[in-house]
Length: 86
Image (cartoon, rainbow, N blue to C red; front, side, top):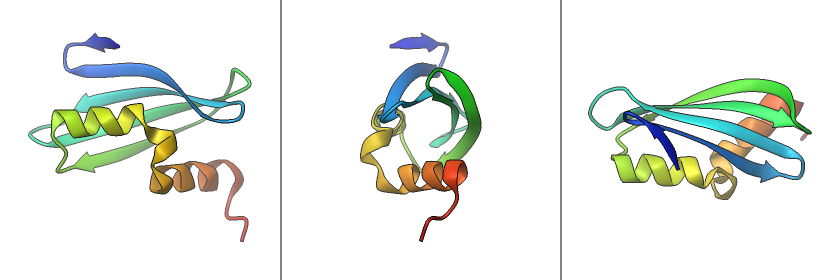
């Protein structure tokens, strides 16, 4: 884990050749901003951010570390990159 102050910075594999550089920053009591720099084959593919309200530090960090296991976040990422396919 690489932390700077209360920030968490990490890189996580999402699916296939898609990865994300994740930054989790506190914005007050139980408020966080999670920013994703998406990378496809090592090339920039876009940026997304999510407001996490009502999460304690452990919950926010667990979410940031386990993005591929969160269907709602993965759906948002897929829609951002490739649009709705249905």
